[in-house]
Image (cartoon, rainbow over all chains, first blue to last red; front, side):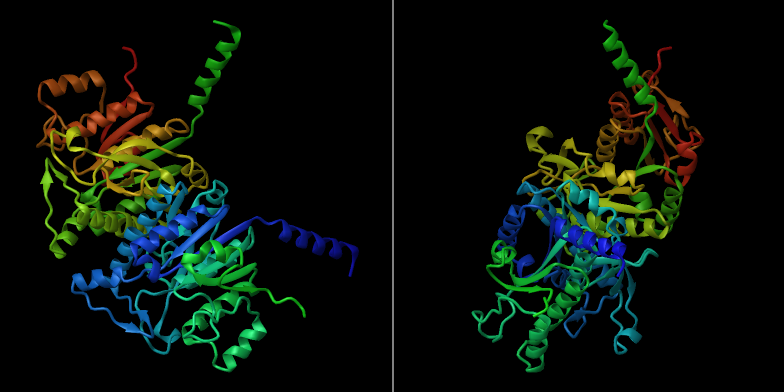
Length: 285
Length: 285
């Protein structure tokens, strides 16, 4: 190894250590569908110091609106089939009603915030998922992410404006697409790792990753890749956790500092590691 | 006058002359309700060089959605009474469906763009209009503008990102409000005049301000305050134009460089003064 290479490596490490913290927090339907829970969560979220990005899912509102309009909703493996009428509904509900109400409520908590979809400032470009990509199932206007462009959100974060992202992306050719919010949170967290030391928080209805899916007190406080593989092989991880954990480890492998999984109601404890499950890069041991 | 004061004044004038151009363009229902017209307009808008802000109205989509959901819409003097159910609808349609489709279509035209409501980055703060402000009529969740905060959009414009604003504001206490798009365009144009030489364009279904409301070829190419007063006194200005012209002169008096009124289809000609009606600050004559 030459002296020059050595210097480069040392500098890169120092630069990583100096990165400012950024929290990327994903909340789902269990919080969005309950006004009281959402208000309490947003109050806690607003109280977190530093740079923040909130990614929200959809919840039951879109399903209810479709029902009120007499538009039938087809689901395959827990995923909504997004036909043109459904895309219109999720765009209205996710990017309109939910996103703007969250932004207005954060403003009321004195947390300056701005709403985004993937189309805004070209934040997330995706392509329509083809039946050939998904066992012949035509998911309709569902988008799989191709790229994240953070150039517009960096100056906003520098002004301490929280970024609030609705799970809608675009293909660059004028087509909006319905995209999984967990995947958006992961992609954003990875992209922001170039500039920040990112903690990615997945908030859901459980206390964390559980050893016993039926016992909320069996939270694993921390887990590494080897432990996860072992638990998965023994079928001790319940199915609903697997995509979250797969995303978590993919994020860690791509530069995210840590991933934390737990209850939105405990967000203040989650970010300090006193609740939930923390997934960090496996150190040699 | 001291030498120091003189220098300050000269610098201020020089700084005004050096301001970069910014176009604030308002489009209404006649464009938004027609997909072909909207596509053509957005292609033209994307082709405009320089800094741009687009303010869009609502159109018939919200009325149609309310009808589909069986929600009755009350109108007074052409203004929608915004009850809670209607606010939810306009938030979904204006801030969700229309705003995000415009942004995605601008991206397809290689014009980077970002959608805003007044709640986003605290862009426009308003207060709920009280019956005592409006002849005893309760307009419901309608907002009158108190302040515009441009700090978040300045760095976005510097990146040549077009700002696309839906006619929804907030009161700072978590309440979204339905706000007139013409008034939003005016308030934004005035606020941006601190940093830019602003041209404010009102696009509507006529060729410009007409001498004969029934004859589209009687466009007044330019009008100043005295001419407007005289035409208004002779009842030669049709009622629908008066709020637009009142807003235009208020904008000019508050620092906007020029206001242009005409057809969205002619936007390329409007911005170079070859179509529509141009309203500029009255020079001494």
